[in-house]
Length: 208
Image (tube, rainbow, N blue to C red):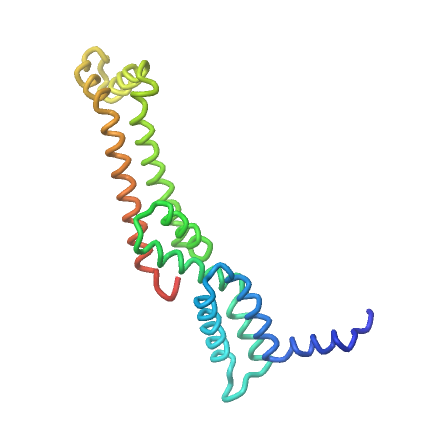
């Protein structure tokens, strides 16, 4: 194994010191938080630094061994940054009705907690039904020549009687399908967003 140069030895010694370990950790964390505004990023850095020092301190001293153990227990800088990013999106989503904001926040949340995965599944189901409803609303304008046939087949399956016996119902559904589709789409959007937003508001605090 080649012998280390004096410069490399000094860098290694500095890294092994308590201050060196902590500053190396903070440096990586700062890079992972680069998407935050400077003031907010530095506030997070100071919060993390203070928390680590408090956990690692024994009496009035911080030993390298205690600090190394604390850093291992605290988690990788990238994982800590991911939690702060998720928290920022959750705070934003807690006051928003935007489906896009809900989706972004839930995806971030899912990376750091199981409840986030549940929120993503609810969004996929609810917004999927909303998109399907809006798609049905357009059938009259793009597939009008087959719409009456499809509605008739659906009525036959539901009622168990021939379409000719339900011509009035079929005509009504064909006329009102666009309005029904839009109404259901809006309903699914509002209900889904409300459910996920309520979940987010309960956890959009200091801890995720």
